[in-house]
Length: 317
Length: 319
Image 1 (cartoon, one colour):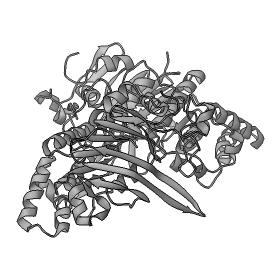
Image 2 (image 1 turned 90 degrees about the vertical axis):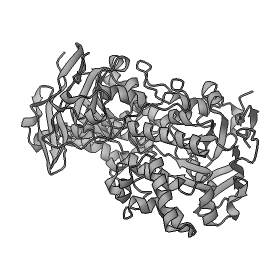
Image 3 (image 1 turned 120 degrees about the horizontal axis):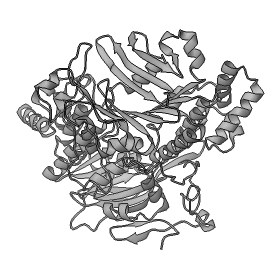
Image 4 (image 1 turned 90 degrees about the horizontal axis):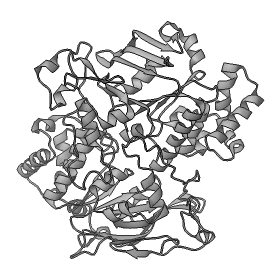
């Protein structure tokens, strides 16, 4: 199956900091691919780099970024603007800051369709109301006339999702879409995303730090550490047999009701994520790794645990 | 009224009929805490869970003596918190807040931050302060040279260690942890949770542990209170609550915990999209507009506490 989105050896740096260091992954149509990692691992920067939305002062290089076969590295600002919000849409963590407080839900939602498709206001309003109903908002007509501050966090995130769907995207990039929400609302929003993804056949690139979310929603997982994908596998395979010591450590850190005895120490990973400069060599996890030896100072091999499962570590599969 | 456990001696925390509301102007008000009572025995950990706006942080502030309740009383270690001055209060109970980025003075060095509670007491010599700060930093796993740093030079986990060292430097009886790991990465969260457990055992501390993360609460708490619109709707020993949740809201909260188990999918928590509004608390059972099993009587009959071993539950529909 040909990929919807292919990213090959993406590098992003901000001055002396290498935020993304040779990340490669692909999202197939109808697939939910999770990028998981801790803060500073480069997962959000990866998403912004794909959309070409990086802040000034950053440098993006890649061997290849293609979307539906189109080379995104060759597109100018106009070309990217044509794609963004149309065939590829993005939703962010904080729906309060990514919605414009000065415009009604209706005017923000319809703008996308009018700009990209030249739809009439009437047609755009109808579409917006349909989608609000689709994302589980009751009384969509009333919501269209409201301002973002009149909505709860969960409703705002539903509005963001509905807005992202206005132009029937093929790819949806969601960056921590439920992190700012209560657990009950989080479950509702993720359930909605999973349903939409399945019904509309969307490719979903979901960025999260939460392994619980990954386990429940992803078909494929890429674990990022210090700007690199250190392990990538189908979800069930990754959770059943993590190969990279970082992935193993992460999975031991999470308290699971009924699995870890109360008050027993959790398997913490010692130390903190290192700052990695452009010329960094070797495994970035070695300072925190129980298995590290001198060979980890040099280039680490990417090995295969199975046809669909690879990891960046010298340890044998 | 929900007693958490039968205490052998004066409980470390004794909260009796505490209520706190805030005026909104125009004669309207928000009831953040509505007649809450509980005790926590010395050495216990009471976890408080609930959605944002349920009143858990307001309750924490009342217990810390930072907010005066409209009615009711809080006793820490047998002493009425409202009758104590700030210095005496600080020796009994200390907070650790969620965001170590905003709870530490950005212009002060770590040593001075940790020393602050001692300095404020105005009864410790310089030498005593220095010794206690050294001990405090070591106890939370910070190297002595960290003392010279500014908060901006520390990671989130290190900052939270500083906040914990500061909370413990006066050797309080009770520590109120309000979402102490929510701003941290999972690997660091595990380090801090392990540290908090170790400190509790070594120093005989009692914790009030507020979190929206039920998996974390299950791991650290001996008892759990589920708070909904200002009330404890269910409060029971941790194992019992997780094994056999009774209140429909507790069940929904537990159902929304996404454990890292692939293949289970995202559960339907069945709560609908009506959200609780503390300025407009529904009559009858306050949970009935969202309750998946509500009956007509739930909208006009107020549920009374039904006692359970080590706690109780407030629902009309449980036996």
